[in-house]
Length: 345
Image 1 (cartoon, one colour):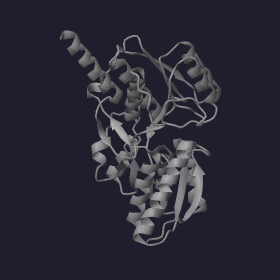
Image 2 (cartoon, rainbow, N blue to C red; image 1 turned 30 degrees about the vertical axis):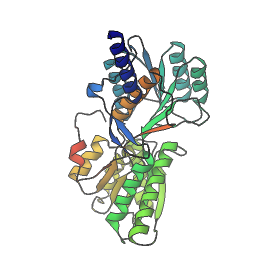
Image 3 (cartoon, helix red, strand yellow; image 1 turned 90 degrees about the vertical axis):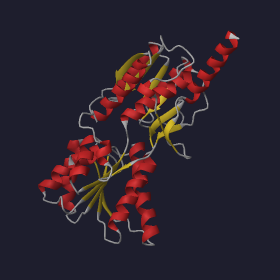
Image 4 (tube, rainbow, N blue to C red; image 1 turned 60 degrees about the horizontal axis):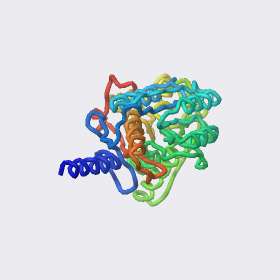
């Protein structure tokens, strides 16, 4: 009888580990946010002695720092060893850093690739070494060897922000400036696609026509300084701009200084397709010129990534190629719920 009870308990734990915790938010299009009490994840196997390695493209931004901290804390709370490597914003250094983690024999490799193509080779090395690879936050060429990509739903988030903007403006003419990260970035491209789709769909629904009047696009290199310089140039070349849409909060936070110096905070509305950075949320709460942003939580992405790695260790193999956190729009109405002045990001 004791053996039967023990067997049933092990089976129950395994089933729980394969599905992990109940998602606190889940929709039919594979958007999910998984939560576990105190970040403890049910596992049918002993996690002690297991090692999770994570390679970041850089640590030069609060987002990257918060993502690393989330992965580290979740890994260690579940009794595993955490190893990290920094690509130092150099693709060759990131390749070398990943190769080092593979040599150290990690049990799962979490990788945030700086470039979608340059890291394909190291994913194949990891597979040859029997190490499952989980792509975090960004994207990688589909020819790579990986279990799943863990990221926010960039398309759905962008659509929510675009719809909000079109609804806000109604039939008023929008003269739009688009601030992007850098050319060819797959995440930025998807966010931009979502923003434009959201604007177009809401205009068709409410107006019966589409008026996507994008006057210019400028690249910011995902930086405050890049956003400031881009916005200064835009205001000179296109002084009639009344809307700024952006692929990320960081692209536009620097631009706010240029807008303020030009005395145009009452004339320009900012809408971000991501990230929910604390500085952006504070602007949304306290001003009218930063209209909305969409949640791209490094904390939740980090937790989910470790959880999926533990699921894999427990035998789960039927992962979707992309695993999303739930889309969420942050506006003045709900911004206070998500503002944490002490957060890294």
